[in-house]
Length: 280
Image (cartoon, rainbow, N blue to C red):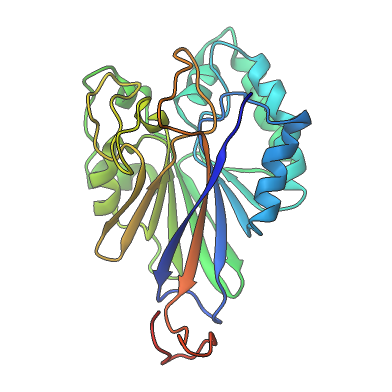
């Protein structure tokens, strides 16, 4: 029986306005999995978490099996009817798009979701105000050479800026970047929050941050899973909601991640927000 857990990470930030928490549901590596009829269980988990928006960090499909796109299309259409959904491609969407045998099916998949309100981010960004705070959502779409096994080039800050520009100086900047291998580059680029997937928790999860291997044939890869922080920048890497090719998980549950952004300035005694309140 397929199951998943809901894992919540709390991130405190000075950039939220109005004293309200913002919850972002993060989906990665679903690979066509269905939890209940039309993914009802996953839909209810996002609803129960009271998410304000959904971030899709890629690989919702399996590139060699176009039926996986049909399996999840209805779920995303329904989700977009309830919440803002921002979607950045993973390597599987990219491979499905560039393969002549599946190009038309992928284009149709994206067209259906776009018409339903899903916002695809192809090396672009969009602004949205959530509970009084301006957010800038960026979708990074790396060329396939960056998924090469095991060796691949490493994008520096200049490469990232050529693809998606510089992060906004206003509000909260959120980067959807499927491949966590380049976590150092993402931190250097400067997003307040980066969300990734791709590594499936390392197949055998050894701890909160470490797994045994990854799809790029790396042993004990950095930024494998969990939460990472550098100064006031944050990165969350999902262990994913599905798998393919090697359907094996050891101490490594499938997961829906909730990023709960909490404003600094919450008074620890009253729970009320003031501009100069005590930081919890």
